[in-house]
Figure 1 (cartoon, rainbow, N blue to C red):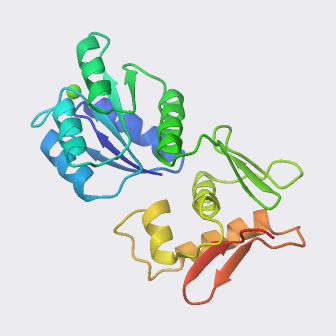
Figure 2 (cartoon, protein in one colour):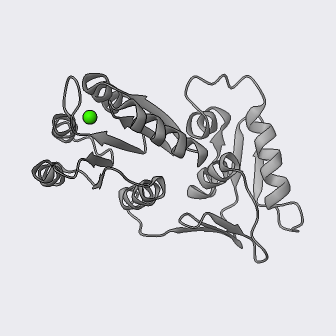
Figure 3 (cartoon, rainbow, N blue to C red):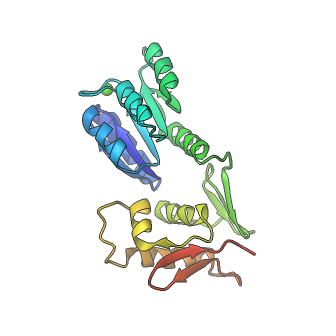
Amino acid sequence: MKVLVIEDEKKIASFVRKGLEARGCVVEVSHHGDEGFTLASTQPYDVAILDIMLPGRDGLSILRNLRERKNPLPVILLTARSELNERLEGLNLGADDYLTKPFHIEELIARMHAVTRRAAGTTQSILAVADLKMNLLTRKVTRGGPPIELTAREFSLLEHLMRSPGRVLTRVEICERVWDYNFDPGTNLVDVYVQRLRKKVDGDFAEKLIETIRGVGYCIKAGK
Ligand code: CA
């Protein structure tokens, strides 16, 4: 998941960044409202975490400007306990959810999953391809038997494959979504990770789910 965090309090921004990166998210932080707005309107993110009081454009203006431009980016507002009016205004302006500071990172992650699922038009928290199942809330992956242990990055890679079964994801797409934009796809990092994932997911099974499309990228089978 690619997340934009617009928050000028450096301690909170870095707490959010660390927590989300540990869960395999790609995180971009902006400490300024105008810069944050530019990023939100020009770069593709899965969700934005938006503080209200910011230097430059404030959070509610950012939200209003995004929605005026019909930008559907899911937005979670970070509000102070005292900001009741701002919270209500934010929800009216089209925020998807809010969190009151201070909050636990787990709570933020749960909200993020909820708003991005809603944005994808599905209330499903379980992805399934053939007998492979991924629970996005508990982060448990199974193929009939005991849970398959994945690192955060492997989980994120598998999640992207499972979200569009049958569709080939190019190495560049995988780099952008699972790692970062400015990553050089000339290296074989993606291939190494896919091999690791394949060993865990397909290793002991007769039916291999992860396919290599030579010279293009990878795909997970849609099932028969
Ligand atoms: Ca602030």
